[in-house]
Length: 128
Image 1 (cartoon, one colour):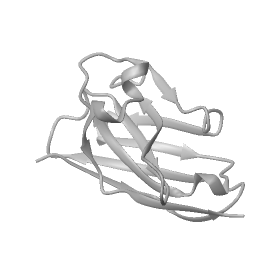
Image 2 (tube, rainbow, N blue to C red; image 1 turned 60 degrees about the vertical axis):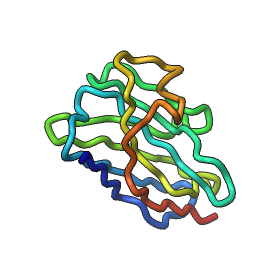
Image 3 (cartoon, one colour; image 1 turned 180 degrees about the vertical axis):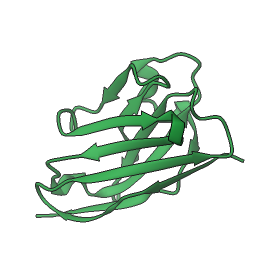
Image 4 (cartoon, rainbow, N blue to C red; image 1 turned 90 degrees about the vertical axis):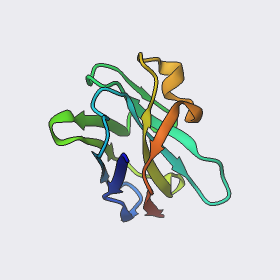
């Protein structure tokens, strides 16, 4: 069984930074695009960022563009999300997931239903 484990969440003041990590094991993840999503209390899970398997293509939600950076290190089976200039509205549980599409698509990278394996999530809380 494939497994994704997120880490790096925590409590930070507005304007601060956090780096989330997503460690993959047990299945092939290095040849698939990977994404980060988030879910705030009472809200639906929403797309944050995605990256192609070869680090060439990325996609970001408008709400995080310019503040968040997604990257991956296939030698370590790990995907990262660097989050800078955090805002209280970034407070949510952050999930990483594998996109099962065979080719990169910016549109497909944003669709929650195009992801099959999900981690358990890590809480990010930004205080004002």
